[in-house]
Length: 134
Image (cartoon, rainbow, N blue to C red; front, side, top):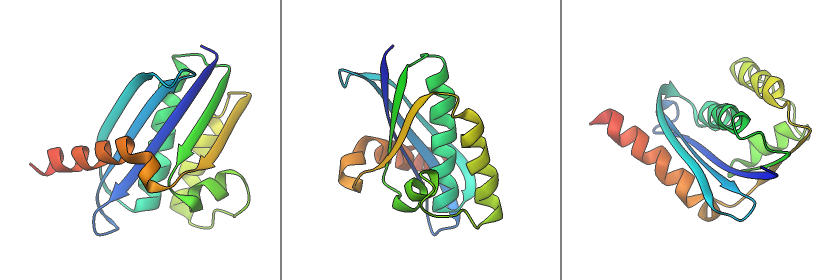
């Protein structure tokens, strides 16, 4: 596969609170390759955003893409990944380092999108939390 386009989202209700992640992987033709959702327990919104990206990169590895574009609706996380902001929170630093370890892909980019452009990943987050809470 030449290019993988990844949309991720993470969210926590009451921040921190019950949290979930949602991931959508597309090929270069914008065809859905894979979706993923998971309840991750108690977390903050930022922890969930980072954990979604960690899982997405793990899923991406099996597709062996030459290029990856990651789209997140968390401007903070995107700016931290692009080294525009420092990661000061120790818990986030651990997850941030996991992403750096997973960023074995030579051609990877992190871009911010508005929430309305990330609807499917957001829907998966809410489904994961709703299913876990019964």
